[in-house]
Amino acid sequence: MCWLSVVAFFPLSSGHAFLGYDPKIQAAAFGLELQDMITEALGQGHTVVLDRVNMINSTVAPIFSSLPKNSQGRITAPSMRHVIHRYFGEKRAWVVKGFEPHSANLTDSDNHMGKILRSKLPEYAESVIEKDLSHGGFTLHDLVSAVVVVEQLIFDEALQTVKAAYSLTGHSLTEPLSRTEVLSVLASFFIVEMLEGNSSDVQTHNRDKANIKKIYPHWEASALFLDDLVNDDRYQHKHATNPFVDHKFRFEDTARIAQVFSQEFALWSNHECDDIKDALVEVDTHATGRVRLADFYRLSQGGAWQFLESQEYLRDIGALDESSATLGPQVMIPNYVTGMSNCISSTPFYSACCWNECMTLMSELEGRIHAPAAPASEILRSVEQMSSSTQASRNLSAPLRARLNEVADFHGGKVPLHGRLLAQWLHFVFPRECPFPHVAGTVNPKTQGEYGDSTVKEEEIEQHLDSEHAKVPISPEAGASLWSLEEELLAVPEAPEMVPRGILRTCALLVMAGSTVLLLAKQLAHLEGFISPGKKGKDVNEYMI
Image (cartoon, rainbow, N blue to C red; front, top):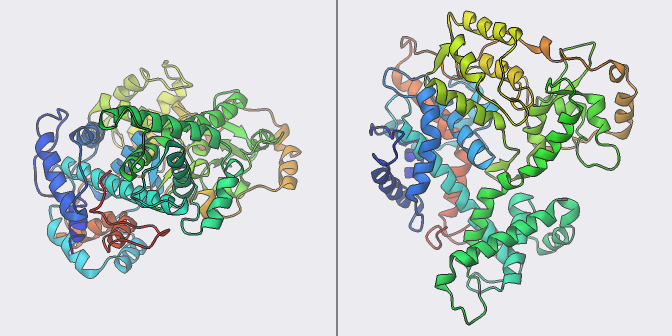
């Protein structure tokens, strides 16, 4: 039953004082509290490093300070999902499943969501949630707690893959490995964890390993990255080894290297995303953040393996602008680059995707405003001082100023920072960095693996290249007709209580718990003990990462 404390801990709403911007105030006590709770929930062998808590706090505290809060100074469940998505996106370039941007728009009253959650959560777990989380919202303390637990569960999952990699390569967990052997195990870890390879069939795995360069064209660079991590780990732990004998790697050494690789891989491999973006920017001559679909497919000519997604798939993931009958379909650069089609790898709990630069721009804006809403003039002053990788700071044009004033008028004087309209405006200010925010329910982002056959056919490419739209001159006004005054706020103002508070609270908590139901189910399976060789799973008390 100790796993229930994970549910109760996610999040922990116990009325503790907030962690502020100075991590020295309460971080030490908070770190000990987290350690006690994680130990109770997941068993011995999990250490919450104080620096890790401080880093999480320093990232989420500015976001928290800028979010709308209720009368108790707490944020809503959708706001909490938003913060967790932002943290993992900015620090790891991960899209954690259940916290995707499109799921953050779901409200607590979505009937279909409630049905899904109730079908997956045991009644006794639901009762524990309602009993322990009865404070009407989430504090900064809760946010840091939630991030720590999600991160720890993800790291635990990586440990299962390391065990599977040992089995696939014919090594026992107690066997000391040479440098060549540990690199082979880590290559198997990469295939299973990052490329969703088979974790139980040795023949299938060996076939994947032999063809890894075809499966993943950037494997050679990734192998060098793994090699560097092995060298770094050996250097950092040289004090614990005998310099007069050949160094051997224990299981915990391999697991530690694999964890670091999991943490850093998405951001390290973002150079692949930069290459994709650079190719698109080169044909975006008017800096509208858009390229004609014909030009997009033209980039795939000559044997390139990118830019081959079908028009239907591009539409489904929200990367296609079809607002102009004259200009025809256009691929929106930031929506495509940061879209699920370009996720480098996918694990059971998260996808490693292209880093979203707009998150950093938004964090900078939040750091300047320090409030949930601000007058248009204040936002203009702040944004004019900001720059991106492709856009220098500058005085904004009259049309952009007019658009922001239009948003302020729509809201009666101030612009909410966490609404669709400001995100839409930022898309036109930084068209190559900030994705266009589609209205909730109009897109259905999926990775290419989840979608199925997403590749365009050769004859369709030829049709687009020969179409009338391909002959229309590129326009500096591309995308302008996509602007709409359709608002969606992350958190709506607190309204008079029309439904018993307990019911509303339960709905909100169920939505939050549902975001992690896969994590919890996985962890419950792990707590059953050892599993047979070749199958994912682990005794959580055995090893510490």
